[in-house]
Image (cartoon, rainbow, N blue to C red; front, side):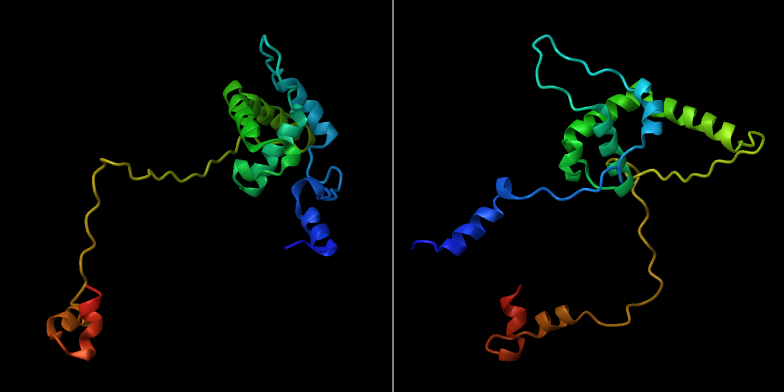
Length: 177
């Protein structure tokens, strides 16, 4: 059955390549220029293989994507495409953690805050809670002790015990064993 002109237009609009990009307010989620000036020297240069390859995504875009994931708590694969792919951002995040980028950034930010507001280094506190997750093969926890007799009899076992052939009332118990 041939499509009408209206259906054809609607079909073309729905295709991904024909969609208009969403309007984005410039910089509302991005790292400010002043902060990037602190961070840029800490980020290692991209490693380009001997065969060349695709041009690397700028580190500032990757860092904005990492902050997006950390702020929102979304999965890496659900990160908006404007920040490159989630797997690329995750790979950079892991490499930067291993190379100490975030630790050094934290140290520099503390120094700046100390210069601006002052940190009382005499009084410090740490608050944390650590709970180990159960691991296969770990000691099983004890069963919860019963506090008293059951308040209601088990209706299913009573129906199945009293079901008789030809009794329509108990047909449910017979057919759903």
